[in-house]
Image 1 (cartoon, rainbow, N blue to C red):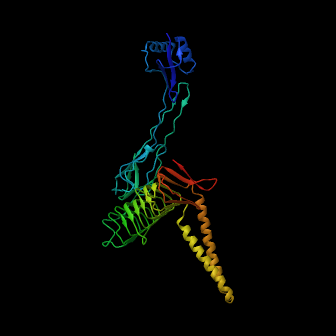
Image 2 (cartoon, rainbow, N blue to C red):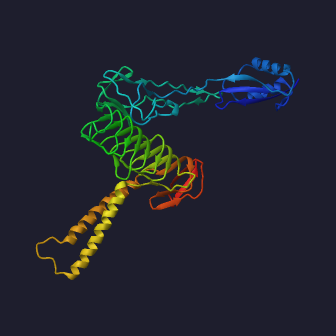
Image 3 (tube, rainbow, N blue to C red):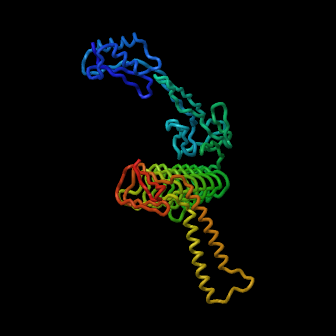
Length: 445
């Protein structure tokens, strides 16, 4: 009796299946033909001839119909992928979400980047989860199936924390941080309510934790970190470390937020922000001027205003359906425009001095020629501009990434090249500089 059957391997060649039925090809007219075809597969450890004969008999006895059936005829050892180690956080911490060596689902357990928790001395902050070891496999042809190696999660402990067995504990009371794989606790001065009439302006050294808002018209300045549980409203803010704001930053043209480190906030509306680290915005940036020397990540949209970054911008969408002009720029250093403006002013002053010297007597002996002094200042600024150019050339793959797309009215600029988008194109797109031409190119993700 003949059978219709065929052999199929799985992806790793660790399982061999024979599929049989009326529509299965090829046709084997006898067991000998079937066994000969099986032998030609060349398995390292094939089943016995008797077991193959039983498979053939089962195929013979199968009810002929349109439905195809299958039997597993040989199996070997499947590889088992391990998991990298990671930090399982037991409290909310400030900082950015860090990922372990391989997969996204091994991310550190961050609840909410804009929420943070005071910890007490000896309270556990995180548990160090050990990696799960990988196991290599072998296919039916005797070839080893290798798997990726796994790693312990590498992090550095700074002040205010200690490691006991598999737990990271607070050595002091304060706010826990996890930033650039460094974990630490800072003891902050706490303002129980708002920065307002009861506190006045705050200028001090050290970390500051504001449990309420920074109210309109008030100032706060510190050389370390600032944590604001509420929002910042038309206030002058200058911080030498990181800023974390639980709600929004709402500013106007008269007030500026200056952050020497990283800034994390729920949303931004209006005003001028200077961030010398990275900027993370959970929701939207609305009609604001933002200058950042790192990367900008916006969970929502950028509508209106001018958002500039040195490295990259990632946003859901830019502009809106009404065509509100929205400007995005990368490879931008906030000092560049300022220095260029000063240089141009000095060059104009130099020109005026030269014109004036033609009409007046020569400079008296022993006095300083104002033209020489101006020229020295111009050359010093030119040197700073050359240094900034070098810094920008070293930025790795600057780009703008839209996770949804852009609306008409979006204007982008990278170095001297610029593009204005004139129609809606709400599909995920990345804009970057072509290495060969130096022009802006866009491609769908």
